[in-house]
Image 1 (cartoon, rainbow, N blue to C red):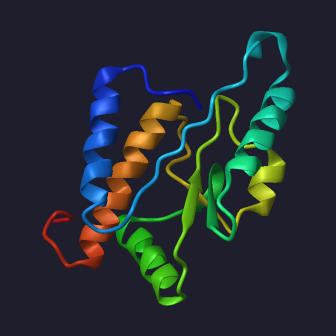
Image 2: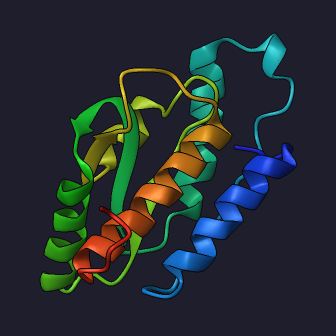
Length: 149
């Protein structure tokens, strides 16, 4: 949940965010991670993170929880999700990536949708980079632009 420390990851994430902004308005909100995490149990850490996440959620936003047990999509499937949301008049989408232990059940349960990038585990920053690239790809698919193939 903290800011990206590796410059190559930060550069990659910023690169795709800039590209996404060609299609939609983007606001990236990174919440401060829980301090004293070594002294806490995983469920305590997730509970503290959940409180911060829930407070920061935009009112009325369609919420997507990134969760290893979520639905897996191909890139055209993600484009279809964005198309469907646009058709339904959804203006705000909040995509949530948890900390080291994932998202707390209370965050996952209140989400409108659960998606998974992969059954593999990625660092928080790697997940952000992959997700940013896939969102960009989805919008190029929606616009019938050649990036996808």
